[in-house]
Image 1 (cartoon, rainbow, N blue to C red):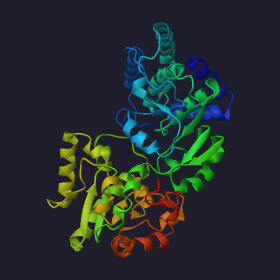
Image 2: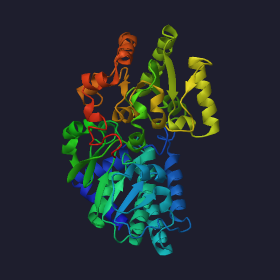
Image 3: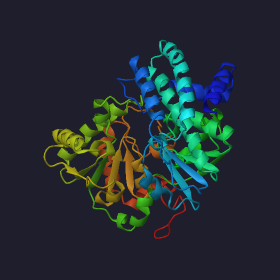
Image 4: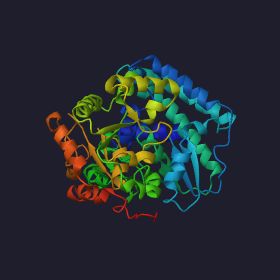
Length: 437
């Protein structure tokens, strides 16, 4: 069914169908986190991904989920079950099953695996020829693996006969329009996409779904500028990721220590070092410049305390954590102060009065908590979030940095929220209240 749907999509694409143009253009050209910058242009990456596709296809069979009575399937890029379970706790009232990409391995019969292997072998020379004329060759090779994963997802749904709705996290990946269209057309399911609270223009300029989810107040207006490139039926409004950790702590978050600043890292120095694909928004240079400005600020204003909140990438294992400590130590010296490494950033919002970042979605978690926060998108596109209210809490140039930081810091929280019209981004704007989730 997946093979036939893919070939049909190719034919409709060649005939100029708009929906199929979105699917094929994204499959063969869109950004993906599943390969790095060095792999992106290698011709050999296609053979590597072809081999990985066959390995995935022929892994020993396993039961993808035990919850066979679920009416909702939550589909994810990697195993983040505990995180998703906490996030969905106050949102979903129906039972749901949870599957991620790697969990799909081996969910097909021997005959189906053999037939699909022959299909992949037939596609390989065609993809190799296509790759000769493309810069992003890894995208071509990854399609082979994505087709296998879609096939196994389809097979997994056989053990979930009551599922009517599929909720997709990690919906920024390039195969999501294909998966969504396949599930809608062939399995007759509704498909809901859930992005993080970052700008939709990064990964969601076009797409296919039944329901698109807004997780930030600015999404509503931004989606209105993009919706002509979307095939969808409805939209809905969910709180930002991490809200479930904020709600129980709202009382303790109300009185953070004064003159404390928290830098929320996006780990761009490490992404660059490891060859991750850039967003192309000058975000890496912006974060470097922000760090230098913070260093100068702390030297000139020692009465302020700076706390570094690490990105999960920067503390994913002991080896990387040692590199991270060395990196920040070289910037700020021995007195560098980190938020507790073993805990997430939200758990320690009360350590600082003002949060600061280039573009991190963690800032929206702070605003949800009703706390002060600001962006520093040096040399990044103006009105990055498509909301002038957020531009008012954005520091755009070095000359204004110190004065703006002091002004934000000196302002009490209620005045900050009121003056910059941030109520829509707080828990009250989402209909929550202290002690009443």
